[in-house]
Image 1 (cartoon, chains in turn purple, blue):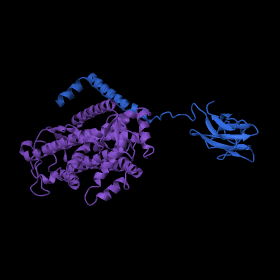
Image 2: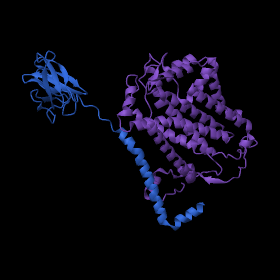
Image 3: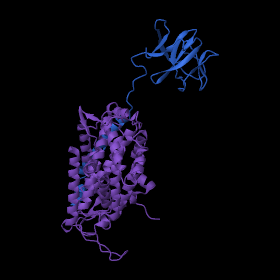
Length: 368
Length: 157
């Protein structure tokens, strides 16, 4: 039997004798990462925000009532009656938005540094799955307050899903739980939002982090050496390394504290709003006496605008679907092994054009 | 760099203690900052008490003939209105034993709890027999209308 190193402290020692997890934690924490790695802590920030969403979402679920008769009033009660209810709800609202932002920035960082290339193709594919699950959270969560904006954005959003060639009608029925947005839709979206998606996202995060741990962080300077034949060995690139713990972890935790501060400020200055209660017979949204168009959340605006300007609806729907497919399969489409920016001009140019297009369509969708 | 830090720590235990204190203080205050709104959120908000600031129409004397009783909701609290020789009286219908809802036994003319057979006197709410530790709390009744036939309950009066 292997000898067990028991830590010095009395409490730690007591637990370590009974759990023997010290070596597990050591294997997880005491790894080395390239000194040149610049992650900007974005993956960790996204994970932290997911944690914030789990905590605030669980709290909200204690008061929220998912039926068309009660949903709106329960959200109103959370916002105006329950102590700190406005804060918890607004942090959940802003946490969702920031999670999308940090996830997209994380994706861009991985792209620009070429960290999706061999041997990290599957980390990227799982990451695109995480993006999909996160957007699913946004889409399903948006309906839950059951106000006019929620109701009509969901009506329009599910209508778009109904336009997907071949499976559109089935998809629409599956999403809405019937032909229209009704109490059945609310139950489905609530179940998806609080049970299905958290399990999917949690599972994908576990896979994502396991691969990241097993492969280590990518060097933004050198491509990973590849064996000449499958199963062969290679000499690792010699470059300066730094400890993951405590150096990197400490910086990451400081980044989390900063993000939490930003969240609280955003939630306090611009708390989550609530429109009039959903009215299935009128899609007029009036804010401060001004009638507004039914628009989706900002991260769907590009697709929304695309659908408005592309005359053929099917093509307008196929473009984003193909786009997501290309994104998911990027490591297998981009065969250039280089990671240095100056050796990947075409890939970076295409990405810049895509991002510019997304930004333009998002702004256009907002102002039109 | 790392070795310098290690030497610095080894050379000045006071500095090390101070840093440990700072770290502990930061961790505890952060936890407190996060926990305070969560605990506040979990404490249920005060709901409006049953019939707060008003009276509740329980029915008319025709609904509760002499020798009977009726359980009516007052807000979220049930109240039993009895019409016996003592007149029209009302009590909280929540048994003082374990919280079951009491009813009226027309044969023995008692307020009876079905759960553990506690008997109460409809004239004053006092315990006649069984396990209940306290009498039923009485609720004020006022008869109104031209014929004095409308039974109003005044909770908290």
